Length: 286
Image 1 (tube, rainbow, N blue to C red):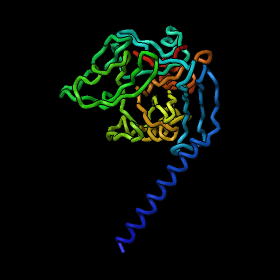
Image 2: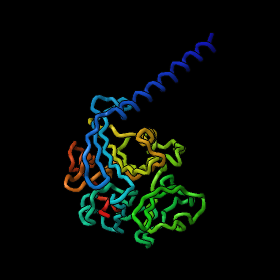
Image 3: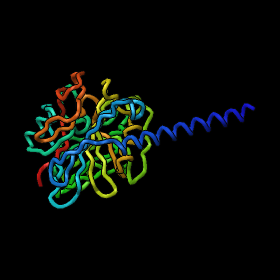
């Protein structure tokens, strides 16, 4: 009897999880996204799931989708070694079409805590743990080649991996969420399991690039765990995806519109709560 009851319970539990996941994926795909062309081959998508209809919570998602064709914008990094700036300030100074916050940084002193190379010059090496091991966010990288095309790379377990990457621009960040269509294994830390504002980059099977933010720490938007973020990127069609710095840093800026998400650093549901950061990923006119 006990064995039968256990089997029945597990069947019901797995059935519920499958139903919930299917419901969430349908909510995302069938959402009435607001769409705006912001540049050649480039569109902004935003939607507020305000009926607790995504992972049983309110969520505000903003993302830019860029085709890799013709006169589509190119990618670049903005970086400061000591001075911190808002994503908006970085974007304006770099004459960007759009920008998102970049990788993790020293909040007190400025500067990235992860490897960064800009225009062929290595600016920062990884700051490793005392035992010499890499953090999960040091096991992947965003790279930009000489033509401004963006790709994602996965650590090959060698100590000098990022130094040997041949692209002129390299920004180590993570953790990697999806690589070559396979969902990556995530750790069990609170950073992974708890809901926070998130920033991510994804690449779809057709080559389109997605720059995405999910707002959080608000009644209007709960934020996501990394497991939930991975599902979002997969449901949007990404075959490769990586997490960037999130939390109060999460910001998506668009030329002529300004900040389009709801940064959480001022604890208000408005567009004014940007945190000053050390680096960004930008889109620029080709």
